[in-house]
Length: 443
Image (cartoon, rainbow, N blue to C red; front, side, top):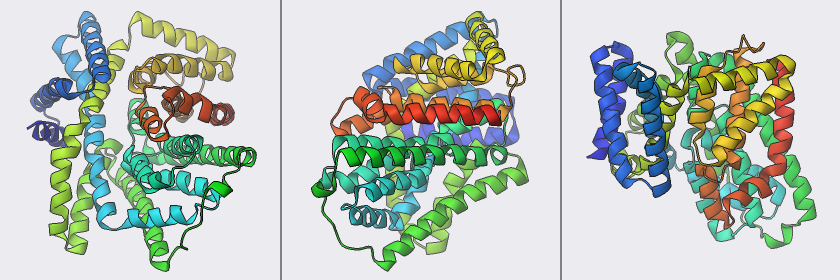
């Protein structure tokens, strides 16, 4: 029943986007609140109580601002595109699974086991391709391929973090990019080159640092060679790269032609791709089991995400224009006029402090994106967007409460603090400094 409630919310949101009916917006908001309350009963204790706290705080703050029901409705409706993206994006994994691409990735990684540097590059590179589409599911899939090998804990933590966090910087299928671009009113076509450039920089820094780390901690003797890569698997990997390129290019072309919101485009493409797969392969019977699994297992498992995303989005919207938000904005504006470096470090420190105690990045970064004015700060919207995404990426890697850290901690057998600070602290520090310098020239 909850699956139909959540999916109905997504479908009605997409319909309302094109029709623009005010009464339908209230219906969609009502469904989303029902989904929020039903998810509260199934969510884990920490996201449940944190979500209830943030939602309550957001509702109270917005009500005290005097906007009433309409203001609350606008706050919840503003975060709905992200919830739809979160719900519908997993549909993209269906053609990849049925197409046999994951098997070829497994063979590739096992083929690199006797070469730690190439294996690390293979893991981070594969996550660079898969994470933009599959989100945290990409880390789970890669770990399943390598679980029997039992890689050293630090190598797992380093590779999973570096590979996954690149997607936060550029993928329109990620809430980070979609949200920041939406709030700053930036088109994806104007942003994509900068986002991919920053993510490739992170990938490069991570691989260089691992080469030095592996030299001090040799792994070659621990890892054994496997069979070489066959031509059929090479072809599958080439098709996978083309699939990602075509997918992102399609979103970009649709945005240029229609000027629709990128989040809406991504949601529509996520629905359309499995349908096209069925048309091209004529494998409709193959599609039925994974679609049923998506409805009965994937969607109902979004309890934690619905609690955190909706409540954090409501809180971020409510904070806009408050004395506290204006005070932070004024403080950061003063820093910006003194030095961009100081401003960037100030933004980073504020977000890291908030997210390190468990508050989601949507609340911290979302509030800043809605509150800060790039022109008043003496920078471009693109520069501000890149800085906020850089901070989002780093805070995701460092916060012991982030979904990434919780998952990698479980896979690697070390604590969330260790996966963030110990395994990736140096990479994040160097990447942050280089990124800030580059953004200062762009912005």
